[in-house]
Length: 139
Image 1 (cartoon, rainbow, N blue to C red):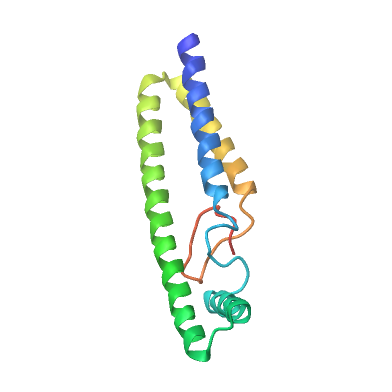
Image 2: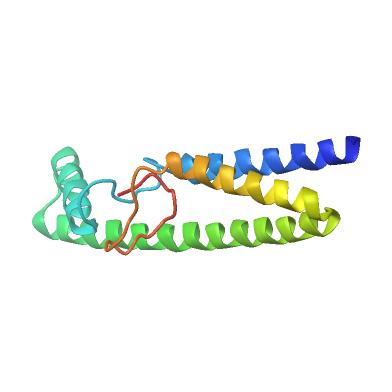
């Protein structure tokens, strides 16, 4: 019984950590929340231009740098997300191998519930913008 409790506790821990990681970058990662990438880049460059007094040439160069940063951050976040997903899948497979048939049914139900709860925190996606994060909190 204690072993099952420890396994369930570990599953809960990893679920909470994964949800935290998925939501932690929202608003902090530099990806656009509303509107398209070009709109975000233009607004960011305009803000830099106003605050720093950039010339037209500097502003144009800043736009290129902003977009480059966004693309690099997106690549890193996607790689991290893929790595986390691989760990979760490996863990689930190993845990499922420990369980009897009745426990597997319960575990699958728990996973479905966790997935549903995780989806509730996702208010939007990046479809069509080139930034398709699952449950990232971005539009």
